[in-house]
Length: 307
Image (cartoon, rainbow, N blue to C red; front, side, top):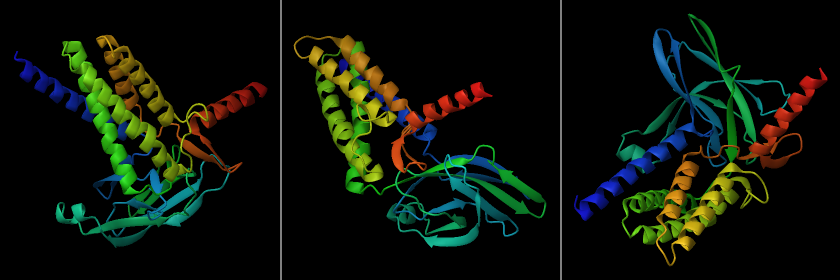
């Protein structure tokens, strides 16, 4: 195979791997909308239930049900508290769409559906909610045993968020290309490794903390200050790429590039915001869900032993 064609195929393969990893990360993350299907009056409705809201967004839960015979109620409470659930009726509303892309490309000028208003919380605070749908044929309660968890976050300016996303995608793409080139014995893997480190530094270690600051009030909540998984996985990938670039500075050591590429791929595939910043309502402090998760499990185990 000609060298140029080989490089093109490896670039194409790297792009496919990067896109698949990005889609997997997005769709498995705890902030991606919860999707459920429900049958009402012989019609199937695919509902997307919000699990992340910025403080610059309307504090509402929307369901795309347009049957006027359906009455819906939202039940919510603060996450991990003993609060009683508060009920809020859904009301049909229409909102104008301000997005140029949605209007000109997709031809969508209004957002419509049933909306339930919820009280806005501070960044990193969470609520949990479930639904009840009533219609002439009966009543259905959805997700009561496994409520949807919704986290609030501060507004992140587009000039910060957009470059962060694009640069991290580019870093992942170059990382994968570098790893494939190293496996194939193509010398330019060393230069690609340097550019991967540069992009990872800019997107993950500079813009990443800025996004975190806008969204949850802290630049860094990973080691040594906390156990935020998003920050820590970025740090792990960053350190491995520093090692890979240093080890290839004078001599070709492709194994280090391959290792760093695999580590970044694994890190990139971990659901975004998993065990992220979370407000503890009992103290008002913002902690990491990772810590709170294991603390609660430990407390439950102690209670079981006592009984």
